[in-house]
Length: 124
Image 1: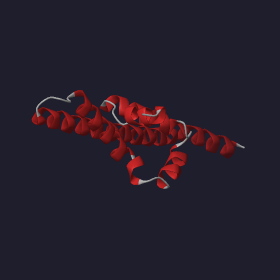
Image 2 (image 1 turned 60 degrees about the vertical axis):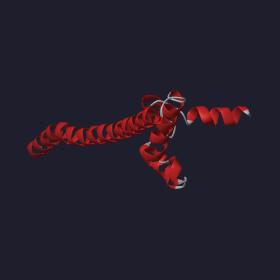
Image 3 (image 1 turned 135 degrees about the horizontal axis):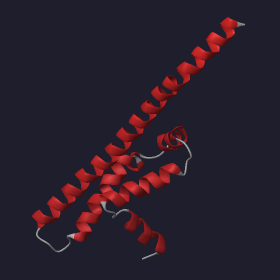
């Protein structure tokens, strides 16, 4: 088994948290959400976070429960898949909330400055 095959297998079998953190680390390397999105559009569907992260977590759960009864393997894989989806969704929701908060707070902080400018220019 080649080293790259082993690495691909290892990356494909990560806990929900580890798979999510790996995705975030890779996404941050693009420097911006638009740059990451532009790259992601040209990738196969399997590269999408809601496809890739849960599948990696599911694979890890199956490896971790190998040799156990099928119902235990199935339940562990199902839980890991569900947990990974939750984490990806959580990241998206937090980023959305942070973006919206930044947008609104920028307006709130900017409004007094515009008022002061308007007052100052009307005095002149």
